[in-house]
Image (tube, rainbow, N blue to C red; front, side):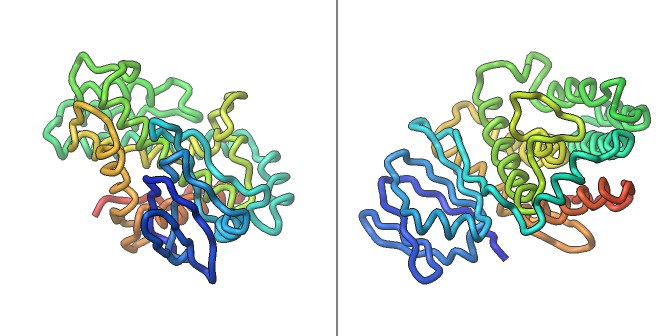
Length: 290
C-alpha cells in the first residue's frame, strides 16, 4: 500500500532505478516507488528523467509541481486511468440527473454533519445546533443552498465574525493549500478508476478541470479545517506548508477499519462512483474520526 508523501525541497535530479526513486543532490537517496502516494516537487530547479515519469505514471503516483513560491501549480495526470476507461467515460456521460442530485444531497449533508461535529468538539454548541438543523432541510441537489448558509456560520465560529474566505491572510492561504492537497488526491483516484475529473455531479464550471473531484472532496475539507484551526497561522511559509502534509499521515475510520487518509479517499471515491452507477446512495462509505 502506498502511503508516503515525498517532498523534494532542493535542486536535484530525479531518476528511476530498479523500482526506486533515486534523488541525486548533495546526497543520493532512494525511496521505493511502491511506498509513495504523493511526490511533491517544491523546487522548480528539479529535473526528472523520462523513465521516472513513465514509472510514476504506471504506479499511479500523484506528482505535484510547485512554482518559485512553493505553491502547487500543476500535477501529472495520466491519459488513461484504467483498461476500460472508454466504457467508464460513456457511463459517466449518461449518469442520470436525479441520481446525481440525490448523491450530491448526501455528500452535502455529510459535509455539514462533520462541520457540526467539529464545532461541538470545540465548544460552539449553538452554531453546531444550527448546522444540524440545516442537514434536515437539504433538498435534492441542495437547491436551497444549505451548504452556503452552513459555511458562513461555520467559518465565523472557527475564525471569528470578521473572517471571510476572500481575505488575503495566512489562515485562508493555509486552507487553500490544504484543500489543493485533498483535491489532488481525488484527481488521482478518479483518473485511476477511468473517469473524467472534468464531468461533475454538481460542479459544472467550464473553466474547472476538476469538477468531479470538487464534488467528492467536500466531506474531507473538514480535515483541513481542523488542522488550520489548531495551527492558527499568522504567516504561511515553507514550515507551515510542510505541517499541512500531516493531514495525509493521519488515520480515520472507514468501512469498519482504520485507514490512512489517502486510502480512505480511495475507498470513499470507489463507493461514490459505485453508488452513482447503481443508483443507490446507500453504497457510499463516509469516513469517521478516530
